[in-house]
Each structure stands twice: as structure tokens, then as C-alpha cells.
Length: 150
Image 1 (tube, rainbow, N blue to C red):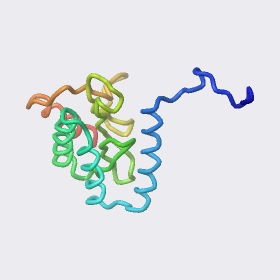
Image 2 (tube, one colour):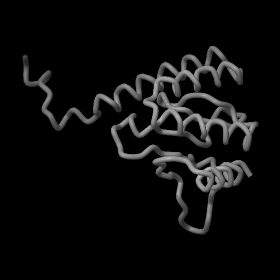
Image 3 (cartoon, one colour):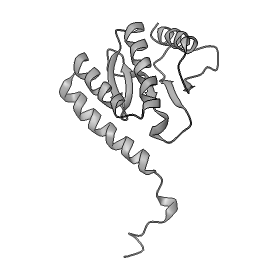
Image 4 (cartoon, one colour):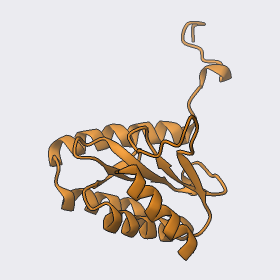
């Protein structure tokens, strides 16, 4: 093998998990182009992604899905990098769920993109760690989602 083709460890920038996420996103983009803005198809794909999660992540993802579905029925369910996400009318993701198992972290994340209207002065949170959901967390999530789409 020539020196030109050899890779050093420092050149392997992306982990296997990150490579898989990018591959999933490319497949999602192709699927989105085929299905357009079909809510039922988007939800079907989202629920299939949730079903593949380990139970601890799956139960939280299901709860978040129900919260977003009721609180922001105008957001379209879809997947984003293989995880449940919710997009505006332009197809742009507003909020998403990232399972802790996705990157082997100790918590799952409820995240918001820059399209979410969560602004609060010069600094605000755009991601929230989740270990489990009680009534208190559900109430906070409903408020965040409602504010995000206001």
C-alpha cells in the first residue's frame, strides 16, 4: 500500500456510530423525497425507529411522540439521523429525540434546532437530558414544544 493510501488513526475522524447516522440520514432524505408530506407515512417510519430502540429509550420516545403529537399537531413526524423528529411545514426539523443508546450515553436527549422559538435573552437551552419521564417532565416538555412552535 502506498503512503498516499495509508490512513492513520487521527485521519479516522468519524466513529462507526456517526458513520451509521450519516448513512441513515442519506437514506431518510431519499425516502422523504419519495413520500413528500405524507403524515401517516412519516409517523409509520418514526414508530418503526422507536420500535428498534432498547426498552429504556423506547418508552421515553413513545411518550415524547404522544406529547408532540398532541401539543403540536402541525409538526410532521419523521426520522432524522435515524431518530424521531418533528418538522415544520417546510420539512425542517424543529425538535428531535436522540436515544441514549444511539451513542452509548447515560441519558437520552430531547433537542431543539434553531427553528424552535425558545429564545430567552442571550442564552437558552436547546437540548435536555432525559433519564425517565414523570408528570413533571411531561409538563415541561409540553411547555417547551408549545413555545418552540409559537
